[in-house]
Amino acid sequence: MARMKQGVFSWEDVLAHRYQNNKPTALPRPRRQSALSGRSQSQQKQPDTRLNWVPQLQSALLTKLSAELRVMIWEQVLGAMRIHIIQRSDRRMGHVVCPLTEACDICRGGLPPSGCSREGESRIMSDLLALPMACKQIYSESIHLLYTLNVFEFSNTWSLTYLRPTIPADLWDAIREVELSWAFPGHWLPTKDPVKTVYFSAGRQQWIETCCAVTRMKGLQSFTLQLSGSWFCEPVEKLPVFLEPLRELHLRQRWKVHLPRQPYYVKEIRNIDGDLRKRGIDCAVQTSGCPK
Image (cartoon, rainbow, N blue to C red; front, side):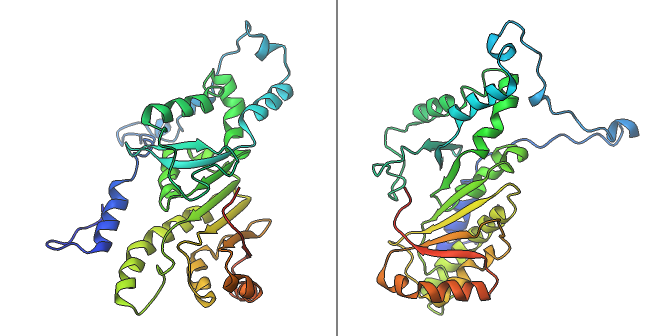
């Protein structure tokens, strides 16, 4: 828990306190063996019962179709989606499946649809997980596809670090494609301005935690950082300072940074890209609008 100063609270205190208080409840950790337990028992790992299932001989789907055909069906149902990760009003993490059209409020930088109430979010989540939750056999065959075949988009500055402890580690490591729309003032960078310094100190730790979470994703194959034109307006020489926490991110294909489509950035795009390469930051810089 962040420490709060007694007396008058600064804005960075308020943001740090809000960041800690809004964290969702993490999954329970596996219980440790008692020190009084036998040595042989303490050395044994607890089995993962999620993937234990009994054959259902009465199910034609699970007995007559080959495993390869079943996986093809699961892929059609669970794949090719862009999933916006959001935080619900009760601090729990949820999602909205992007309609992949220009009408998507979240892609345009807005909030989830007003009709996405707590009950509505529960229904959407149930719809998405209906197939994996049908039975343990289907769960074991399909649940990883939900994480490997879809794009996970985080448009809130804290959602990525919030999501990590709420799902099993093996499913988190199965995520292959992440898009992060970082919507915060670009002046959260080192500055001599005392007013801007408040924002920098308040937001820097959350940004570093997010970068650490991204660089430690074992299955990540594609990463895109989208900087909003309505917020990010820093000179190009400050961009390497901002991206420094992502220096250790090395993927098979260079990860991408999308800068606002402004004449200034379009003109400097080659200089930005070259400077980042010299500093060992393995990304490709582009200028674009909101992702579709």
